[in-house]
Length: 374
Image (cartoon, rainbow, N blue to C red; front, side, top):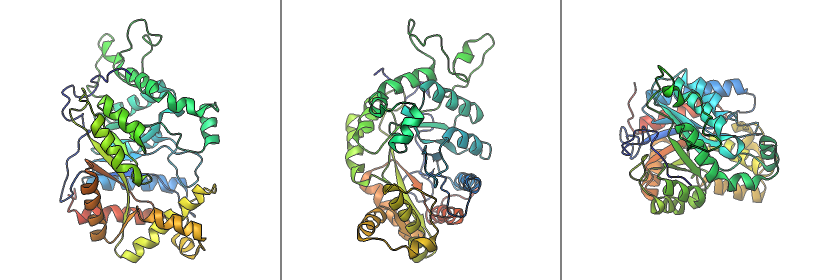
């Protein structure tokens, strides 16, 4: 694959907003991953309004970035269109970085993603991230409908080529003679070459996302920032981060590795309430893993659910990777995870039935670390 070109700061030191700054007593920068979850008895409209409130809270309390993730055919997750959601969030925030964690690149034509995120960059200059994954973000049948092809492995195998193509569209630098040399992603750098044209010095930095070693190695080889899905692949976290760091080669984007990890964490005023809330997400995962995806169940339904022995084993394993409890307990868990993994940034996702519990969790975590309150 081609060497990654500048496209950002050009000095290779801070990656144009990639590197965050820890605030308060947090060991590393803290960020938010919002799955825009929809609980039973609630609507997608309410979930999206909660997303705005979470982004505004995150901005006011000094979280570094707010990301949403592409999912499909899941009634309890309303984030099928990250670019649309991010445009809405951009209209309600001023400073916080906004991005995708991630866009599943094999589901889309690279030119379309370059256009969408070029548009977002024009809306919110200097604060847009483009995180990319190679999984479909859904089941095989839905992925086939998205891609209009049943050759799903082909999309994953072609990921490095798709990534190279996307970056060339973002930088508008296909070589002469290339079939796409006369095609331009707009908004984008081509506007600066038109008579009287002026173009932003920024373009969205590209991140690679992963839950195994493939994207870790690719991100390291290309000198890109890396985000690992610890929240659902904890057993692979340290091996993937080690592989990323071992593979890393300095680039025009970064001069040293930068890795964040997604962390499932929920704080409540009392430990019992935190357990009550996270059980809703665990039951939702049981249903998803057994082919019964639905809305996020209420705490009452989750508490009353009669888990089979196999389901109980799954839930216990799932919850062992969810940091939950009082604010002090969550802070200790996040501190320990940062130390154990050496992650450069923690991206917290709070999965619960209602928006109030999720908002309260982020507020309590911010208070536990003494984050600013602008």
